[in-house]
Image 1 (cartoon, rainbow, N blue to C red):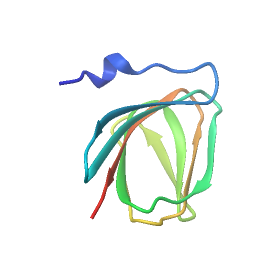
Image 2 (spheres, rainbow, N blue to C red):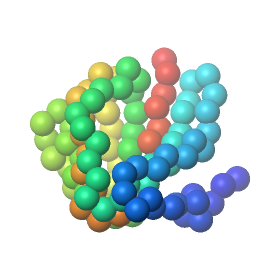
Image 3 (cartoon, helix red, strand yellow):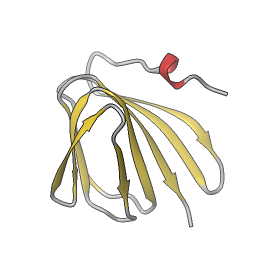
Length: 99
């Protein structure tokens, strides 16, 4: 068991990621983005979800902006183009699933 809230830690700038769980089919990672940090447009070869724990940001998924705030769950299909911008310190869990 891990208390995710207790392991959130924001860097002064950039992104800090912590692997929570990894096996053959599932990869769960905690991301902590410092205020004003951006992750440029990219894709993932796996389908996944982003669950926002806290913060305020913008998640752009295939051209559509989604506000990242506490409790928001975002589903991504494999190879979906996406980018992120943290307006405030923002943390989220990224779950990637292999088929």
